[in-house]
Image 1 (tube, rainbow, N blue to C red):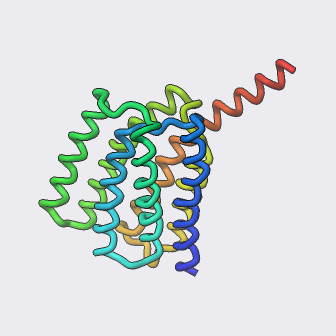
Image 2 (image 1 turned 90 degrees about the horizontal axis):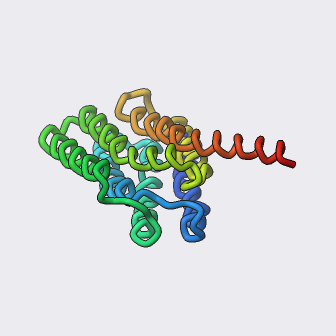
Image 3 (image 1 turned 45 degrees about the horizontal axis):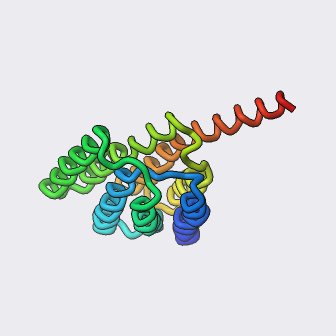
Length: 197
């Protein structure tokens, strides 16, 4: 059963990338370049750290996230926005500090905590972008590829250890933060459209 949920988390995580790619190419979504650059590096490091600690289906969520980030990084070069604003530069600096700390400590729990914190820093430009302009992104990617995939990953774990729980729980929370303003904006617009008709 754990394997099933692990495979499901991969399918949801990477599968949600397909409609998101279409939205990016058609101009309905504009990814934050700094987030995509940092996420690509972070997912690679996170997968390496996790694979040294456990072998459960939770790894498939991270593998799906890594595959997603490769595709989105390539697309963000042409279709993305930002990348060199003050917040982006702060995020790059924080990433270097936390990655250096990981390389020096080699403590799995501390490393994953730092990677999650670094990931959060890397995700800030996207969250800020969405809160400022909910029309700059689409909710499906965050609900299906993030929240649903993270839930499946949590069901795929072999234990309740911190190292297995922290990343999927984090993915669920951050994707909720990204999806919420888009969903609320869409709901408000639907209500106002009904009133106008």
